[in-house]
Image 1 (cartoon, rainbow, N blue to C red):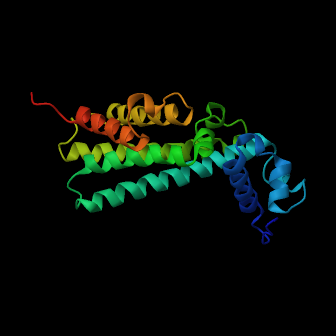
Image 2 (image 1 turned 90 degrees about the vertical axis):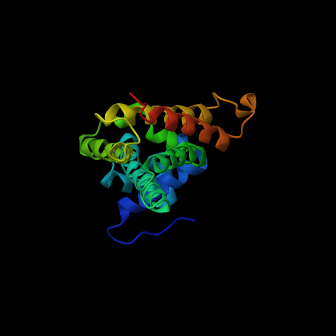
Image 3 (image 1 turned 135 degrees about the horizontal axis):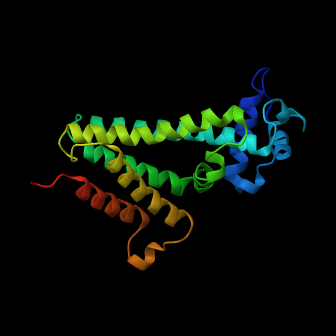
Length: 211
């Protein structure tokens, strides 16, 4: 049933409808007319906020990354509290597991956030918004790496290479699982177990070696 919106909430109602369509039927289902119909507004209403479907999708990417970053940050904080902040590398592992779980639980959303053309918006009004939102998710990982370095659990130095190593590891596994490039049955492990093994290997590889 169409959902009414309160005055001033049109943009929020449209984005909510767009996310519902995406999660239910994938990206092809997200059109301006379908979003308007789901939100219970006229076909012309989306034009007040989005000049095209690309603009709508770019706004979704910005919103999606902010929510994703918030989820990763919450995972990090909860894992740190579990060990009273004494084992940030273990907490970093939980962040990676949260990343893979998100991709598996919400494959359409994960695919949307990783479309290269939407990471470089064509509609100027969203350019900075998307870039800042995507950066906020990466910065959760980078701050976690810095915490591990401060605790002596990761080699000192610029954190970016270590953050990139952790990111590419979990992102690669997430992509392979969501796109059907890896059948866990071929390696005799359940997806969750496979993710934990990869993260365990990354954890081991990130730890400093005696000189």
